[in-house]
Length: 159
Image (tube, rainbow, N blue to C red; front, top):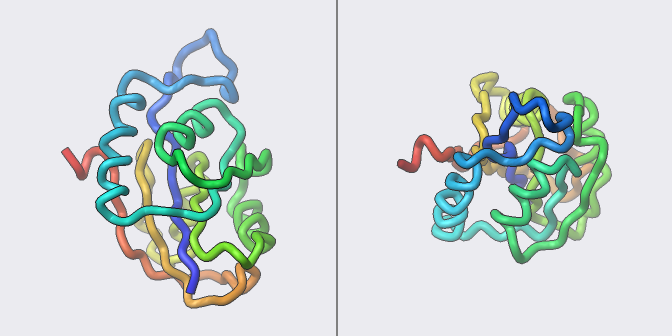
């Protein structure tokens, strides 16, 4: 059994013309939401062995503030990823990891959640997190609809 946590980066200053999309910083709301989510994740026993993260500033900041004790892999393919890009990325993860967190962007992170669970209902808001369990031994066995959503949380559901 493997688990994947899909995490959308915290709220950013998306309409700030002073920054490129890649260099957008988190907004004040984003910085406020992260501790709320971190506290809830601690209650839930959140402890991924590997964090795979887009190198964009808003995702790296989210990762560094939310997840302080895991190994990081910054993967450029997550930034502007398609659904197929995320599937291919997960398929080549080292099998030694049982629980991983993937921190990315919409729409691909929401599409990946839908793909794994066959729910087609998830529109991940900023700083939302979905835990999905997969009845597999190897990451290259991931296929559509095989995942079971364990929980879905967001700052809005916790306040």
